[in-house]
Amino acid sequence: MKIVLMTIGKTNEKYLIEGISNYQKRLKHYTNFEMMEIPNIKNVKNLSEAELMKKEGELILKQIQSSDHLVLLDDKGKDFTSPKFAHKLQQWMLSGKKTLVFLVGGAYGFSEEVYKRGNEKLSLSKMTFSHQMVRLFFVEQIYRGYTILNNEPYHHQ
Image (cartoon, rainbow, N blue to C red; front, top):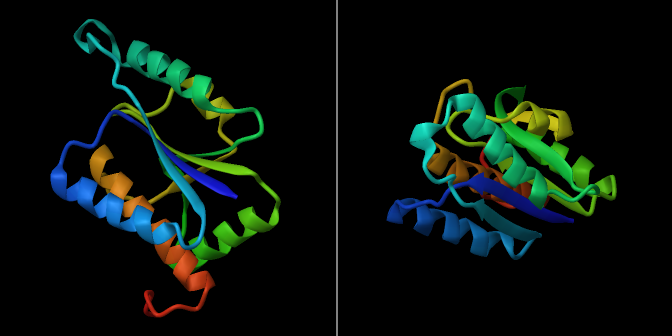
C-alpha cells in the first residue's frame, strides 16, 4: 500500500523539513510513503475564504485518483490513540487499498467538494497546530504506527 501525505503549500522552516525528512527515511523500511505539496494559490488577498477553499479544492481533486482512499485530517474527524491508529493502518493495509491519501487542508480547511470526496476524517488533536507542524506530527505518527505493528521498542505504553 502506498501512503501519500498531501498538503497545501511548502514547509519553509528548516527544523520541520529536517524532522520530516528523518521520518520519511525511517518509513522507507515499512511502506511506500510520499509527500505531495500543492502550491499555494497566488493573489489570495482578492479572494474570500470560500473562494480560496474552492480553488484549493479544485487543485486537490485534480490530484486524487478515483481509486484513492482519501482521509481528511480535520479537527472534526475521529481521534485515535497511537495504538488504535496503528490498528487502523493495519485495517487499511488488509483491505487491499492501493493508495491511502491523507490530506492537510489550507488555512481555512476544505471545500465542500473535498468533504464530499473524502472517505474518512481523522483528527490529530482537539488543539490547533500550524499546517507546517501537522506534517511533522503526522509523519511521526505513521512511523510510530508501523513500529507498534512490528512490536518494535519505539512506542512505550
